Length: 126
Image (cartoon, rainbow, N blue to C red; front, side, top):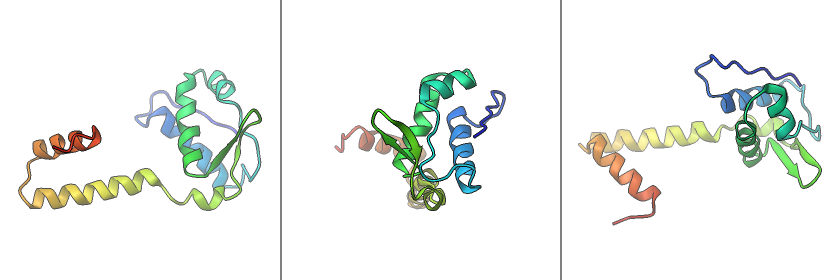
């Protein structure tokens, strides 16, 4: 698997990593059970922070594209190719955009939306 990072790109580094891993799975360059480099190794190879590699690994594991096997490493999930087709981030963005449009249509201001969102995210509903 070849991964290259463009530091000058507007796309965040973690997003570039996620996109390239998903593309490798979809093109069958990475198949079920294939081990990926450790977070530390890939970060060293790309000369980036470990946390920048850990985030896409964690998100891809959440989406069942990768699976972590304790003390053995990170591997391509058996259903990775199928699971690459679903983008949870895009789904969340679409849901929020719909709710925000509905609120704006009801004359709720952006400031009121931000305040309510912050309260809900911080579990302060009153």
